[in-house]
Image (cartoon, rainbow, N blue to C red; front, side, top):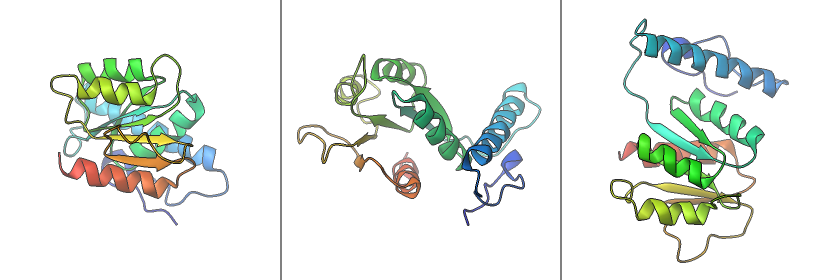
Length: 166
């Protein structure tokens, strides 16, 4: 049984992920969206500021699933379908961490890592690289590597570790 989301509107009656994971994730997304709307409208002040995570993957379904999971754990999520879009987002709103796929069109994950390292104000940003390859290139400086497929708990643990420092 998964733990209940905490705080604000996330304290909804979704205490577990049942047989229909898609419906449960959709309900979580609705609650998170409602909470964001109320925060931005000034109707609800919420709790402390949420750490921002940029999730990058060229598979929209995987990106949506990861986003719902990460948001349900109390993170604010920005989504990008390639490295170039992620870099643009990071320049606009500095995230606490970036989680990126390796193989993508337009700008691959390794190019994103290099671009972030060369950006003033973003060079110290932790990046988690996800891929089906056995290991990341040795010269690539990443905070962590997740080999696909990975367990949701692995991703969440890495996010907690690397955002706790910021």
